[in-house]
Image (cartoon, rainbow, N blue to C red):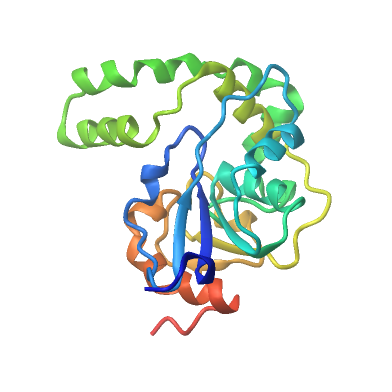
Length: 229
């Protein structure tokens, strides 16, 4: 087995309100990679995005590491990368500039509607699972409970605000963007310069994990993807 210092250290950042179990099916070769899972911090009162990502950077313990972020976690790792020397920066089911946000999010930002989203409703996930009717609804409720476990209201209000108000001065030219053509949160029609996953949805890190296990290693190593054959 390779010594840890010889391994490529890959840090994974989950999506909004999600915990690291969304990466439970990702399996990178252990003789080459060491996987690390970042957790959401509770933001300080009125904390700026830069202050927050500076705090997150304290958990990156290795030089020349790889950052992988999903959805809002993709925005977070892009901001983190501004102060780090990385081997690779990868975002999944996310956006790399304001223009890629869907029109409804930009409308919410321009009108301030994001301020009235009832984030406290996530507190009812446990109750929802108990009263859910039908197999599909019960399965969805179970998924919410399992993966969306960060329900602190200050965090949720902060995350929604920073999602819809995010400003990106310049796209990182080395960024690798992986996006599903069936993403319902960030529609592919708004996304440019990405690696497209056929039939991939916003939660493809869970239900298309075999694709990631096949292609992520080479993407990390070379920055390119081998043929999908």
